[in-house]
Amino acid sequence: MNLDIVILAAGRGTRMRSTKPKVMHDFLGKPFLEKVIETAQILKPKKIIPIIGYQAEEIKNYFKSHDLHFVIQDQQLGTGHAVIQAIPKLDSEYTMILYGDVPLVCCNILQELLTATTKTGMGLVTYLKKIPQGFGRIVRDQKTKQIIKIVEEKDCDKSQLLINEINTGIMCIKTDFLNQWLLKLNNNNAQKEYYLTDIIELAVNDHVKITEVVSKNENTIQGVNSIKELIDLERSYMKEKAQLLIDQGVKIMDPARIDIRGSLLCEEGVVIDIGCIFEGDVILKKGTHIGPYNIIKDSTIGEDNQLLAFNHIDQAIIGQGCSIGPYSRIRPATHLSNNINIGNFVELKKSTVGKDTKINHLSYIGDSKVGERVNVGAGTITCNYDGVNKHQTIIEDDVFIGSGTQLVAPVIIKKGATIGAGSTIVEDTPENMLTLSRASQKSISNWQRPKKK
Ligand code: UD1
Ligand code: CA
Image 1: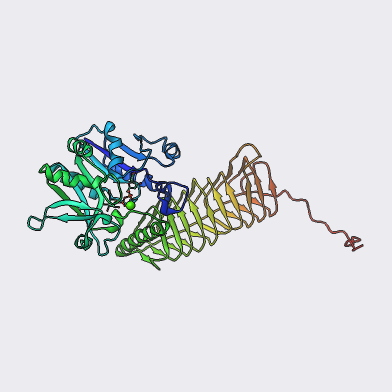
Image 2 (image 1 turned 30 degrees about the vertical axis):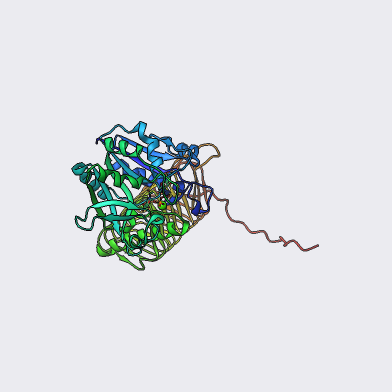
């Protein structure tokens, strides 16, 4: 695309009351600026040019693996002044302006804005806001209804303060025009700043029509100035997501008590109880029931599973018809097949588990391949780590492992084997036999308990 995208992010964000730059604050799991950059990338621009100033080195360092063209604005003399710093880098036909503190800006409206801009040379995203306080107001010609200027709130007269159409700040301009207009900006205004918004009047003087795109979704144009606004916007976004899922037939027990911090896709018949947190990309398939207080990150949960309360599931794939928890921890690279029971206080890591297997109580299974129809007794652990390296445990089909067993990896428990409770297994065990490693039981008749001296 013949487009450069400039992202204004030089301010400190004093009202955040934090030493961290505003755009590096976490919004639903990622810094604001990263969210905006990801959205910008969808448009496939030639360059993404973040304008930074406050703690520029820290910001650059965080994004060192991204393909970005940073520009430093040492002193923050206004939004127009910020864009002027980018002029040497602008070499596409169009330039779009985004804001590092508007994290939910969405690519649909940007696409619309771009189309609008190609028509007249300048496009602007506006929004009709009931309470317009804090925003620049859009002034239109009484007769033609064309946009003629933007007036910042601090510069508004009484009648302009009553205007409900506000400037979102998001705009797109033919780069040739932008360069000319930027050079004509001055700071004769209430804040003694170089306002980017003044280019609207300059455009009108040059007979360039401003094509507006009126946003319908407040969240996508909402800027954040304080922690309160940050929390409110996160909550508003999550409620909106929850509502969309409810409209698709997902039963969310309380849409005010769900956190969807990434993408959550649900199939029909899914039920989600209160207090759950979904991070990254999560898929819940048909008929799955998520009990209260589950934390699920980057995982796919198959059809008809029952997740009881308080599980923590991270980067796992779960098949169909399983019962999980309460209180299980399923760690990255775990793959469960179908009809599996994972009970309380069971931790699984980097393991596959075959169908119809039960690991019901107090176990650690790591770096393991567990077969089908296996029963892992309470308190069984795989000793996968020798202090330096990790080793694999293989438990084949139809194995029964007695409670309180330690399986010292690398080790293979062959098909149909039974392991006596309380064993420490250090060597491979044969198929279909009972193996046990504990000392035989004895009783000592003359033994006396120690007495207090
Ligand atoms: C700006 C608009 C206003 C609009 C509002 C929407 C101007 C003059 N005003 O006002 O019309 O309604 O956004 O949210 O453009 N920044 C820099 N360098 C600077 C100044 C600002 O990088 O010298 C960055 C800030 O870090 C921030 C963004 O630009 O990310 C917006 O700046 P801010 O001061 O918050 O502008 P507003 O007063 O909100
Ligand atoms: Ca602002």
